[in-house]
Figure: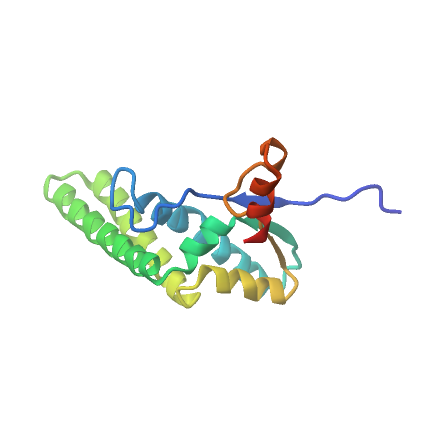
Amino acid sequence: MQIGAFTFVLHTHLPYVRKAGRWPHGEEMLHEAIAETYVPLLKALWELREEGVSFHITIGITPILMEQLADEDVKRHFVTYLEERIQLAEEDRKFHLNRGEERIANLAAFYRDWYADVLASFDRFGRDILGAFRQLQDEGYVEVLTSAATHGYLPLLEQDSSIYGQLKV
């Protein structure tokens, strides 16, 4: 007899930063989220699937984030972001190795390799984060949810027209 159930729901949202420039308040916050969250999550889920592990998760992706993840400019800028990080980490590795700081050089090498792995994984997913989630959804591993258009909390919106506008889009 089943006593209960557990549902693991992840929720993702980022403000609209497409073509907002670079650091400190530009697209880089999106690139960081892709590199440090979405690609590693997808990599882990794909590996579980390949190992024959049965799993089911739910992930909510807001429309604002979906639009940015699907944007070709964002994808291209993300690849540039990763390539720059790989290059900077390698420069740091050489710098610290020349100073005899082997432990710091090893740390820089770790990050160089980590960013290279993120890039390889992104390529593996066809540079299509949403498509990779869609494939897992089509195979029954992931359920993708969304939200109101701008991630507004509908009960707090005073005008019915505001609520309808959030849902109509």
